[in-house]
Length: 176
Length: 176
DNA sequence: GAGGGCAGGTTCAGTCATTGAACCTGGCCC
DNA sequence: GGGCCAGGTTCAATGACTGAACCTGCCCTC
Image (cartoon, rainbow over the protein chains, first blue to last red):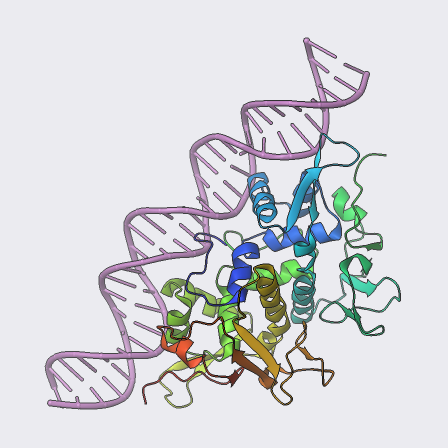
């Protein structure tokens, strides 16, 4: 978070977690990474984040082991940032936070649904499948756009995210 | 969060939620409130937060309907801040975040356990009771100190939190 | 009824993160 | 060799955070 990133004197794992993901923008970067955003410019246009801040967040998340920076498979001169297991472990937190935001601000129409891809059931609060009774791995979560979502967004990343898709699969924004 | 608290152009309930609880210290204030901290001075000594920031956070959380400010029952000239239903709904998020912090930084010894008070079972990721199969209401969660916790903290609030106790029950720090 | 103490703040100057715009750099392609 | 793109770095200005000092009711005691 801003200034003095640490919460000294806090004997608490929530405080430890917030020292890593509590700064402005950080959780949104992780969210995008789970959605499949991997490239610097895609984060940039999708989040509307200042370039310097994005560079700083990507660096600290990589240092914390939440993301991994590596050469892009198709074009080795470019990079991509992919979520590690540690980053995937943040999925239940983000799901719970999103559920709170949705319930609290009682949006007229839901923005997105998250389902168990293999059975189609909406996920429970912790990312579990109520029908199958299992904790759904992030790669088996299907994200389906809801009626509240802007049907014609201006940036290419938002457009790519309009189709139903599994989490973690790379967002394709390259020109065909 | 710092500067421009909003995340414009984010069509996302996570972003909406972070606009309310994403600023520095805010989630720790909510955590303390769920632990039973209610008074300005107790937040102050337990969090080690600057007074001006605490006043600002209490005000914005009250405005957002997460906390409620009211006269103290025993001494009506004092106030207390108690969590509303909206604040209690943040419990699964905080539990998930704490679990991530604990697992990620693999503390040598756990700091706290959270159990279903009526059956003694440790809570699941979403605040459910694996044994009873129910979503445990926050007031039925028992917080038990773990071996990693400082056994002799300096501030009276931390001392009061050393005993096993239910969430939401008011912390007593008044002189006897 | 004057003084002291406490809860619950507000005010202030200084520090430091964030912002947005401008600039840089290395590859690639024509 | 000129232009474009990805992926940054640098910069001044803005504004949040920090810590310390101060203020204001209220209660208690002498």
